[in-house]
Image (cartoon, rainbow, N blue to C red; front, side, top):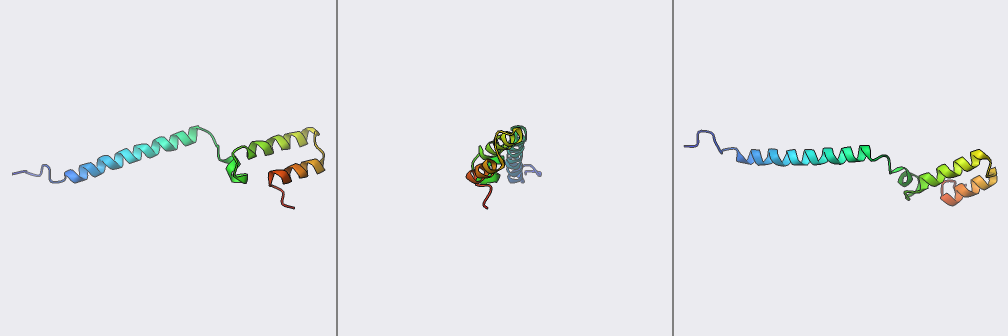
Length: 83
């Protein structure tokens, strides 16, 4: 006679598996949150450094190192200005 022991061992395995999957997802989420936003370049043009390149270009234009025409040309090179 088992008296209720062992009849639901499959549920314990399922609970254990779901616990491991849940902890794994939490670890991945925490790593992504604390590692910073590395997807900025991918959203703008497919390359990781494109966001930083645009930032440098904006800074140079703001300091007066580039004319408006040079600024537009460089944006076109980066693939942002399709005019």
